[in-house]
Picture 1 (cartoon, rainbow, N blue to C red):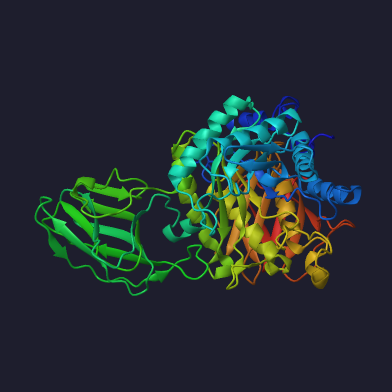
Picture 2 (picture 1 turned 180 degrees about the vertical axis):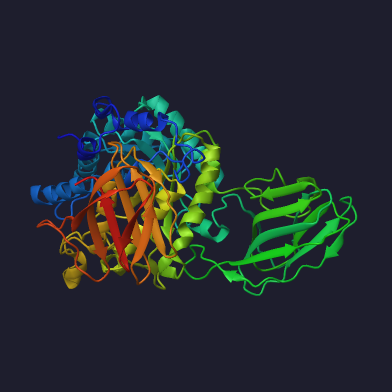
Length: 610
């Protein structure tokens, strides 16, 4: 196979040394470089950028094995994308049948060989691959044999030169889909078994490491990115709950409480001078604000309670009376005499648990707990924007920035990956997802907007869902042919609009880039990246209807840039294959700053790469 294209076009320092390494070692080399200091360079993002990529169904669109036409189409398009990472999951029946006590492996089936061929293709090109199983079927998730089966297939992939960089175990183990329902303790047991099984099977951890928890994380939006919120259960009988904070000379507080009701009155506050005698504190009822939670049929309401002028108090208690609604606390900030306490509720260390008389859950998010577990070498989760459910597009960055900061604190130096990302698809009454939005001309703006916010938030890599569709879904950057003759337009292999922006950003933001988060006008997302070559890429996503000008101050000196533009509703400039081509060039001196312009409802990418 030829060298990875991005290694040719955007070589990191000492490129010859890096390109000879397997993907896991290449990632380790990139991650070993200390992250830039935001304090030393104002808008530099604290990340080790790996890149943008996608999820791929490794089975061919036609027939039982890859024919040359389908394979060549896939390779030519993905070579142009130059992904920073790819996720290729396996289904258990492709290579194994049996039960908890044992079974039979078949590494000669067409389905298995198709998957191995796709993974090997990326391994040969130096692209990091995240893999795992979509499910365990009738197997017991926590059974040792389930871990042994996974270790066996990973060892076989390694022996065949198709070693995935990361193995994430089971897809979205925190999601109850009516077939499976696992607890975090189940994940911990299953992953402990997996680590042991890797060792017993002789899996080389330098080529394939365990990652996780591969959880669905759309719900963090309800808590503004706080992965450690404390939750009181919904109940219709007596189950009052309370949390207590201590601050000598308590005078003010602000707290965010989330409830599954827009007319909630179950939350009350009390103060105490000694933790023994309590008195009610009158706090004005706030106006509830609807939030997006990842629930298809509804959402939580955010209540921000504030109080000042509190006297003769050393303790503050937040109580929730019996209620049929779930309540969660997102954060508590309070002040006292010479004291300020900011409690993000990512643990209970700032909360007086000895005075907690209720039934609040002290558990925290799986994503955060798995990062703290010591079992995984990368923090891997799934995050989908709620824009199609009516959320403001710009909620993504603050939500993820808070979540990523907690993950980095829990596991310094470990990659933070979004192995699935995109737009959360609307569902009908039967739970069927509607991916029609993948065909429309606004999707390129949505996906570029999402990618910019995720990079600014500090993630190291993000893989879009999905490359070229999955059965019963039209989610990809192109369809899988005429498998449904009644919907030829949806299933056409022609490139869809969002290929333009996602592929261009993946190609223009290679691994090893230093990501910057410049100041942004309202409604505009801005990203700057210094490439491993020393060149630059600037991405401007304008969600307003009028042209916007942005001043970029990151580079110095004169820079020659190619300009690419996508405008919603207009046909972008492409070559005969449908790949983006520049609409012009710009040569400008950025010393002291230079203004770049982006049209209304448009994406503009300026890059030193041709």
